[in-house]
Length: 363
Image 1 (cartoon, rainbow, N blue to C red):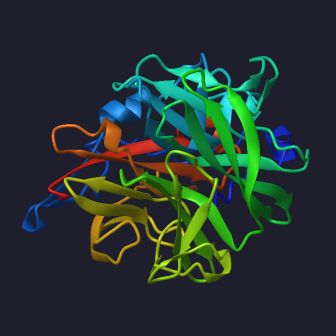
Image 2: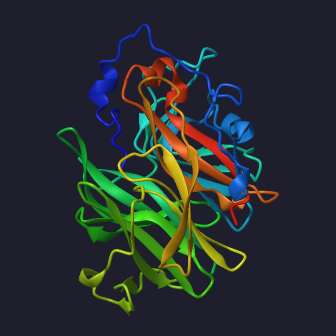
Image 3: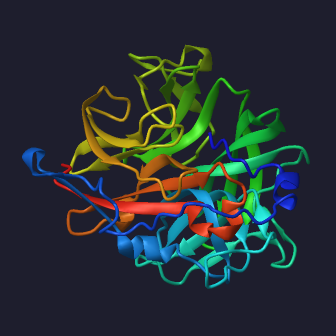
């Protein structure tokens, strides 16, 4: 899912200063591929405001990926992060070699203020907020929802372990958090194995069900699978979509859409359904689809934006919509940026953080 070159701690400890790194600033003047598609009614611009919210210098989260957000009942936004940093950032946007953890959470208000970080351990010796029982495994939390009673938050997490060349998915677990404290009440297994990553995104459809979206990865494509569980008693029972009906047999779960990223968004607006995703195989392009229902069919695929590179070693992935933070008809979409040059994680912290765009004319 994240193909991150910093999951091996030893790689970070071997860091030494790397010179001659080409750095490109990201602003409205220098980004040449900001979409302006009046012919189709779409207009896409960068979001300097939300970019600035995640230009952090300390007092909590200072960089990471995932960047999934969920509106909590009290109006806060809950942000989930995978591999991330909790440390100091200096005025020249460099950081020391410390403060790396595999996951953490953040809450903000609707304007990105009241930035509060949730993690384990201490700031001097931080630990992941969600820790796997197996010391050789760790979690990347990637989506969440609130139950119907609004007293619990459920966090879908992909469980991984180090492997040759990066990592291997070993399953999907679910963390239950108390609301409003967000303290962890427990972690349970949802799915064992790597055939489907069931943590990709969730949708509360308002019909008594929470829809869970997973991704089946093949060599050349990624395919969506859909499950659902009760909004009142989540995970007491789970059904899987077999392309025509719902079944309790997970082996009958069917592919409903290909050509997506590992993480994406499905949401409902004004009675219609929409999906936002980057293309598969780490495409820089962000697309949008309409849908007939939470299970599709997905249609009217349209191009929104090509994500720019910040340096000659960066790449982008896992674009998601932040509907609860969208205002005035502008759909806020964020995407993750990462770098293949380990040194850049430290001498240019803006190579590992989310960036944002706003889309009008999308409905």
